[in-house]
Amino acid sequence: MNKRGQEEFADENSNKKQIIIGGVIFLVVAIGIYFLVSSLMNNSDSEITEEISYLDSCLNNCGNCKQNCYDQDNFHNAQNSLDESICNGIKNEAIKSECIQEVIFIKAIQNKDSTICNTIGDEFEKERCISAVESSQNPANNEEEILE
Image 1: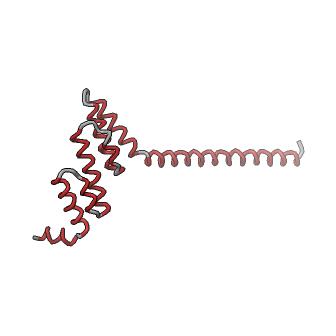
Image 2: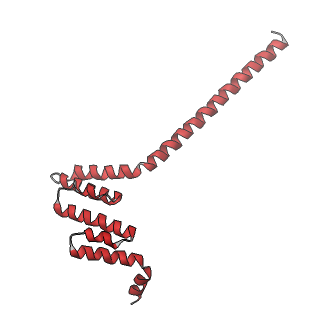
Image 3: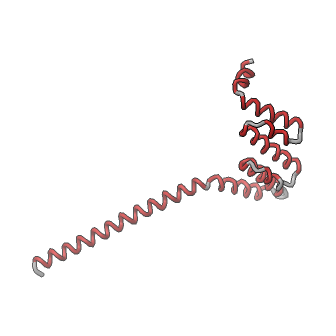
């Protein structure tokens, strides 16, 4: 092989090395991005996983109390979504009533609208709701009550 042939062979090998190195770098970056995206997706699903694991744990450990697990799960979901209709899936009437009252209570405070409390059937809970809404509307009253 002459000198020119050796140079072309060396250039070809150099190009192949550069392509291989570039491919390895690309592969390492792609794998890094994959793991980054995977970890971000797992973090965003952690609440769902936590809720599922709570329900699964409850169902696996309660024996004959499975309906109570479902009722508590519906109660939790209704509060998080502020959707009273989810409470209707609760079989235990006392828990269902409490669920509806709590959702109304939270909505009233968040909207700072005591008229929402009027839909609560229990008079004591209705008054508690109205009082909480009024307190949330005027934080100065809360400070005065605390000071007295």
